[in-house]
Length: 361
Ligand code: CP
Image 1 (cartoon, helix red, strand yellow):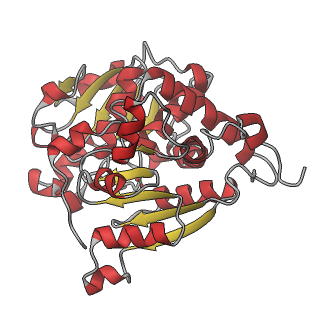
Image 2 (cartoon, helix red, strand yellow):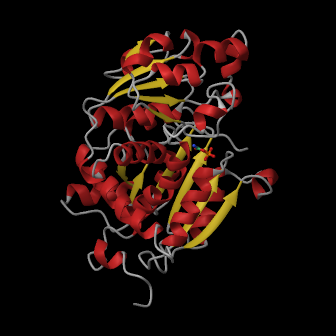
């Protein structure tokens, strides 16, 4: 794999909705709106409450499309969405590709295995090749933090961060709060999680999911507690604004309206920071006894893929209070919203109602 690590300053500078390149900066100075489709979706940390609710509302419209007999609308007809995954994925890549197809976009799929990266081609030349072939938007996953931000600076098409190292996984956070809002009976466009107590449990330190999720939960008013062994909790917890920290899951459960189990990330070295997996499961694994210790209407989430018997037992994952499968299903509608917002939403001739029409009608 061709590795690249953007500087921490680059990562901090990059916001959620970012205009790419110097020409965008010039347009901002001149008071002009960026051209359609020039924004990128790189992180959840700076997503405002208004933008968050707008995306959740849009996702709800596309969830309705997904329930139709023919779940396809012409919103992005003529556009090409490229998925460029330099790290393994099942659900994120497939749901972005499904989302693009349901919006009638063409899909270009790049995976690092079997590509010309193995012949020494650079990351920059690789993504510029995808753009030269007509990609109107790139969905990028990479093992190094900041790579999607770097690519957004190179290309003149929008970039979506589908997970970068330990840094962020913003579309996962959006689908998680969409799932919570609908499970709580809320209208997604008005999501309000004040009064909800969310325990995020496990390998917080290595988790891009946790970083993005904490940001959107804070924006929506939830109380968040990070729970795990000290070796897997954040090194600088003060930068995780507003979160409580605990090493005692059993003490947190009676007050937790939601338990969000994180995957133990062997590929990022989590297991090196633990005495044994068995001890981890004993202290932090969600089992039926722990589920019983939660409030009766408590909910369980997990981003997947799951290490069954480590951070979550099969019986908990399959319990009616588990939203694991719902999260996966909702991922398609949420990613339709992100793609539409970046590629179609700025087009004044393509408002949301027309985007939801059935092709040919
Ligand atoms: N939750 C998540 O990102 O899953 P994948 O790695 O399968 O995409």
